Length: 347
Ligand code: PHE
Image (tube, rainbow, N blue to C red; front, side, top):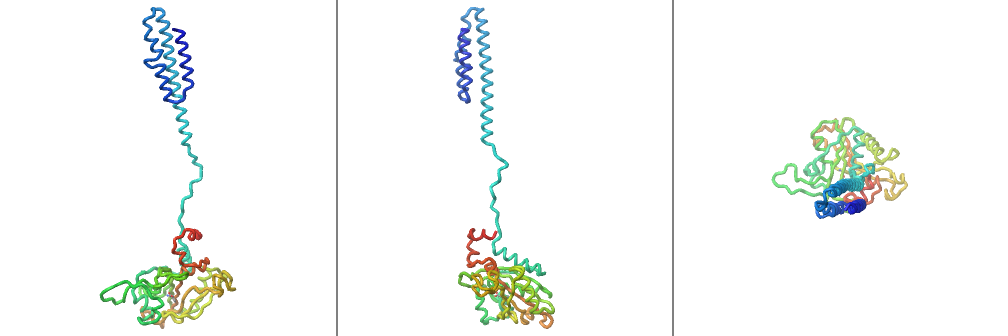
C-alpha cells in the first residue's frame, strides 16, 4: 500500500506538472483528490488494516493528500497568473503612437477671398456692415436713381417676392447688388461715412462658366466733405496692391451706373502675365474687377445729404470673380459644387 501511495504520488505530480489550463486542472483534482479517487479509496480502506499498519499507512496517505492539495493550489495560482499576464499583454496599448489625424475643416475659398477683401478695407479705416438679402424695390432701384421704366433695371432683373396690400417701398425682391446698403447706411448716419458691405446677391441669370444666379459682392461707400475722384483712385489702388500685389497697376475707364457720376470700371494689370496677355486675362493684359464712381447728387439728395457740401465715392465688386482671377479658376460653378477635390486646394 505504501508503494502504491508512492507510485500514486509521483504519477499525480508528474501529471500535474504537464497541465496548463484550468479545465484540465479540475479534471486532475477529481481524478486524484475526488471522492472516487484512488487515494480516497485507500483512506476508506484503512479500517481493514491492523492498528499499527493503519497508523503508518494513514499517516503517509494523509501526507500524500496534503501534498497533492498544496501542489494543486500552487499550480492553480500559477496557471491563473500566466493567463492574466497573457491577457494584459494582449491588451497592451502603445500610448506613444501618433493619433489618427482628425479631419479639420477649412473656410470656403469665397469666404477666404471675402475676408481678404474686407480685411484690406478695414486696414484703410472702413467699417463693415451687413444688410438684408430680401430688399425693397425702392432701395434696390428707385433710390439708386433707377426709376421703374429705366432700361438699367433689365440689367439687374431678379426674383420678386410675392407681396400684397399697399406697399410704399414697392415690391420685395432678392437684392441684385449690395448697393441698396448705400441708402440704408446713409439714412441712418451723418457724414463722414466709410463702410464696406459684404453680402450675397441674386440675379435672374442663366448659369454658365462666369454667371450664377447667386453670388457675393462687396460694396464700398465713402462720403465726406472734399472727397474727389482722386480719393477713389487712391483708395482702390491701395486695395489692389493689398489683394493682388504691390506691383499691380490700375486702369480706370468710363462706365455707366445710374447711381454714380462719373462712373468707372476699374481694371488691374494681369498678375499672370504682367500685361502681356495670357489665359487668365483672355489675352487682354487687364482684369476688370469692379464698378465704381462718384455718388450721384440725386442719391445724396434722396437720403437728405446736401450735395453742395458732401461728395462721395462708391464701388462694388464680385467676390467670385476676384477669387477666380486671383487663383486662375475658370468656372464659377466650382464654388457651388461642394467637391472636396476642388475645395481642399484652398487649405
Ligand atoms: N452695384 C453695381 C453692380 O452690381 C456695382 C457698383 C457699385 C458700381 C457701386 C458703382 C458703384 O454692378
